[in-house]
Image 1 (cartoon, rainbow, N blue to C red):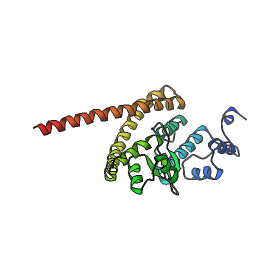
Image 2: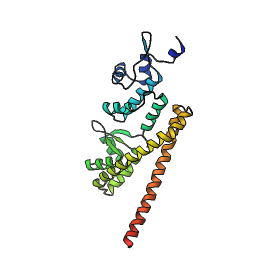
Image 3: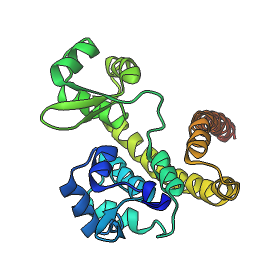
Image 4: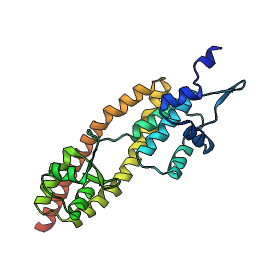
Length: 238
């Protein structure tokens, strides 16, 4: 076997590598989400590109993307994208919060909250980005923020205000994400790519940027709020 084949994976090796069934791999291949196997004689082999694309599909599924949405997302990735390019897509999809949400039942959530939560309470906590219903009465909970949310509930924070705030966050969040993503794609990514940086290096850059980006957003928000208050005071003084 020549060296190029030694670097490739058989179908069994691929299923073990990505933790996916043969049936699913073949299904995603027919859907064009991954390229067909590389033929060496009568045998089919799989490259790091196949691995990267299948791992991306898994990441998109974990974020709740439908098959149709996954197809559209993958279609935007150039056919000549390297495994490092695709790995960076996965990195950008990863949650930016420090703590991943914890799944729990309604009873476990009530216990963690310290009281029985009403449906309105859950709606408010969901709008605040703290509690999200998933399946069969279970919830994903940002545990580190739960006490803050419950404290707001105890102070009578109106559900209507939480829902309105959620719309504001979503509207401006989408625009901000697009702009930052474009900045990274056009000004950061090319520099590291031309330097031959590995996928691990790119992931490290993104992971270190996350807390800095969040801190910068908080600082910008605080500055804007201060400016807004000053403008409001000046208006009232006229």
